[in-house]
Length: 199
Image (cartoon, rainbow, N blue to C red; front, side):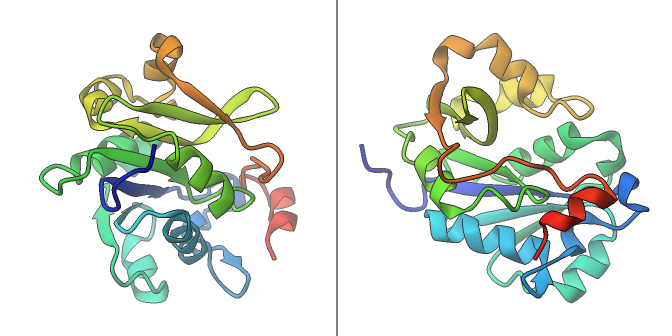
């Protein structure tokens, strides 16, 4: 089933402060010569998300100055230190009234997950009730596709760093699983050792 362009918005969670990286905001880590947040936005667009909402938190003003994010909706999460759940809520809230019927949610600190995997998960979109997740050798990961019918439920259960996990676990039978382990690597950039993954 083909999705109508514009019905699925990309939501990039890029608010993290990089606590285990000595407080370096993850959005501003350099990857392929540019801030990581730029790379992640480009991949979402290449996957088919014409609209991309970027949730900023740590050093939000600096990210706005340094990163080229033209055409994105920039959402500042004042509660970013409370964890990914608050950023997910901010991102979903920002979609109200935009006409988006689903959100493709990805994380700025997973540069090993690119447009090919994102496009596969996007391909699981059918309507507002859609719910899909990338899997890596059978283990669920990002990106996740959240149809608008699920946003309120996700927002109600997104606490700390759990994001949509609690909601997805409660609705596991409804999730379309999309294996992406052949085209992407789901590592996180969390520690100094992980910086070796950046180019």
